[in-house]
Length: 103
Image (cartoon, rainbow, N blue to C red; front, side, top):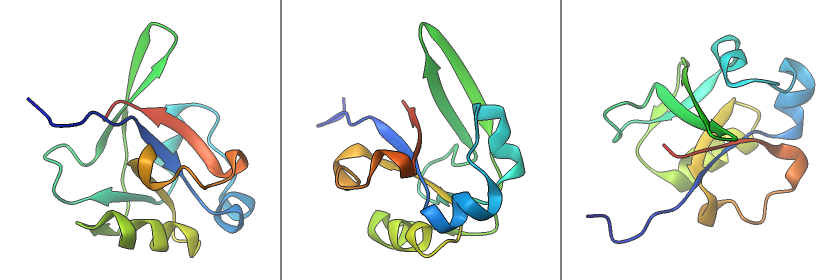
Protein backbone atom coordinates (compact mmCIF):
# COMPACT_ATOMS: atom_id res chain seq x y z
CA UNK A 1 0.00 0.00 0.00
CA UNK A 2 1.56 3.34 -1.02
CA UNK A 3 2.00 6.02 1.61
CA UNK A 4 0.82 8.69 -0.80
CA UNK A 5 -0.84 8.68 -4.18
CA UNK A 6 0.07 11.59 -6.41
CA UNK A 7 -1.23 12.18 -9.92
CA UNK A 8 1.48 12.46 -12.52
CA UNK A 9 1.78 15.30 -15.01
CA UNK A 10 3.54 15.28 -18.35
CA UNK A 11 5.45 18.56 -18.65
CA UNK A 12 7.82 20.18 -21.12
CA UNK A 13 9.46 23.57 -21.57
CA UNK A 14 7.96 26.17 -23.87
CA UNK A 15 11.14 25.91 -25.97
CA UNK A 16 10.70 22.17 -26.49
CA UNK A 17 6.99 22.55 -27.27
CA UNK A 18 7.72 25.36 -29.77
CA UNK A 19 10.28 23.18 -31.53
CA UNK A 20 8.53 19.79 -31.42
CA UNK A 21 4.87 20.78 -31.06
CA UNK A 22 2.48 19.99 -28.23
CA UNK A 23 1.04 16.46 -28.30
CA UNK A 24 -2.73 16.53 -28.74
CA UNK A 25 -3.24 12.86 -27.79
CA UNK A 26 -1.17 10.41 -25.73
CA UNK A 27 -0.38 8.44 -28.91
CA UNK A 28 1.45 11.54 -30.18
CA UNK A 29 4.11 10.96 -27.50
CA UNK A 30 5.67 8.29 -29.72
CA UNK A 31 6.99 11.10 -31.90
CA UNK A 32 8.52 12.99 -28.96
CA UNK A 33 11.62 12.79 -26.81
CA UNK A 34 10.24 11.51 -23.52
CA UNK A 35 12.27 11.51 -20.31
CA UNK A 36 11.70 8.31 -18.38
CA UNK A 37 12.02 7.62 -14.68
CA UNK A 38 14.39 4.66 -14.51
CA UNK A 39 13.05 3.27 -11.21
CA UNK A 40 9.62 2.53 -12.69
CA UNK A 41 9.38 -1.00 -14.10
CA UNK A 42 7.18 0.29 -16.89
CA UNK A 43 8.98 3.59 -17.44
CA UNK A 44 8.13 3.58 -21.15
CA UNK A 45 4.41 3.02 -20.58
CA UNK A 46 2.51 6.11 -19.49
CA UNK A 47 -1.15 5.69 -18.54
CA UNK A 48 -3.48 8.63 -19.17
CA UNK A 49 -7.15 9.16 -18.38
CA UNK A 50 -9.56 10.80 -20.79
CA UNK A 51 -12.94 10.83 -19.10
CA UNK A 52 -13.63 7.23 -18.12
CA UNK A 53 -11.23 5.85 -20.73
CA UNK A 54 -7.65 4.86 -19.99
CA UNK A 55 -5.05 5.33 -22.70
CA UNK A 56 -1.69 3.59 -22.50
CA UNK A 57 1.00 5.50 -24.35
CA UNK A 58 4.22 3.70 -25.18
CA UNK A 59 6.92 6.35 -25.15
CA UNK A 60 10.55 6.39 -26.09
CA UNK A 61 13.44 8.69 -25.53
CA UNK A 62 17.16 8.70 -25.09
CA UNK A 63 17.29 10.03 -21.52
CA UNK A 64 16.42 8.26 -18.27
CA UNK A 65 17.17 9.18 -14.69
CA UNK A 66 16.09 8.21 -11.19
CA UNK A 67 15.67 11.67 -9.67
CA UNK A 68 12.60 13.81 -10.25
CA UNK A 69 14.49 17.08 -9.64
CA UNK A 70 17.02 16.15 -12.33
CA UNK A 71 14.26 15.05 -14.68
CA UNK A 72 12.50 18.39 -14.20
CA UNK A 73 15.75 20.23 -14.93
CA UNK A 74 16.22 18.18 -18.10
CA UNK A 75 12.67 18.95 -19.22
CA UNK A 76 12.99 22.67 -18.50
CA UNK A 77 16.27 22.69 -20.49
CA UNK A 78 14.34 21.72 -23.67
CA UNK A 79 15.32 18.02 -23.61
CA UNK A 80 11.83 16.56 -23.91
CA UNK A 81 8.67 15.67 -22.04
CA UNK A 82 8.88 14.38 -18.46
CA UNK A 83 6.24 12.56 -16.43
CA UNK A 84 6.50 13.82 -12.87
CA UNK A 85 4.41 13.84 -9.67
CA UNK A 86 2.11 16.85 -9.62
CA UNK A 87 3.47 17.87 -6.22
CA UNK A 88 6.89 18.39 -7.89
CA UNK A 89 5.53 20.55 -10.69
CA UNK A 90 2.65 22.52 -9.17
CA UNK A 91 4.47 25.77 -9.96
CA UNK A 92 4.74 25.05 -13.69
CA UNK A 93 2.44 27.16 -15.91
CA UNK A 94 -0.53 25.31 -17.41
CA UNK A 95 0.74 26.01 -20.94
CA UNK A 96 3.72 23.72 -20.26
CA UNK A 97 1.56 20.87 -19.01
CA UNK A 98 1.04 18.23 -21.63
CA UNK A 99 -1.32 15.85 -19.80
CA UNK A 100 -2.16 14.00 -16.61
CA UNK A 101 -1.37 10.36 -15.97
CA UNK A 102 -2.07 7.86 -13.25
CA UNK A 103 1.36 6.26 -13.87
